[in-house]
Image: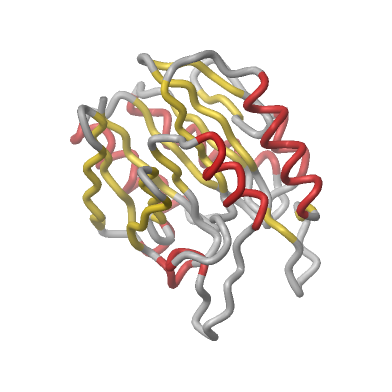
Length: 219
């Protein structure tokens, strides 16, 4: 299975259009969007997600901490919210967590660690026995992909505990723009594709193992 992963569009219609062109060229099975699509505007976020889905590829997303909480419940026929939910797809199950743990900025969609754990467990309780992929705007705590420019770890302990317990084959995160890259927790591959508003994305191939290529498109 081939996936394209995007995160942190931050209202950029130009980036969404450029990403859609790349999606139509690469022909993935699905697109995963790990949050911060708009800045609290559900209608704008929907337009951006619909732009990505113009290539007739299924889009699965979670909202970010900058998105409206109402975006968690927005879906249409080809675009599905994964926040607190689970969707079967091509022999895998996709589960999701939107928002982030508390930040200093009082953004629209933030949770404490107990709430994060409850949302993740709610999603997992709806999953089948297929291999698990987690889409989480907030990365797990204490890895390279949650480290801010100031050297602070901004991830979630509960996300890390969930990964260590459930052992998903793949985690796609975002949130920390400067922490673009690939990391591992045990056998789980974790990817932060980097901010899409700046033209960053990841191509992920899932076969016997997970192969990730970090790439760019022109915005």
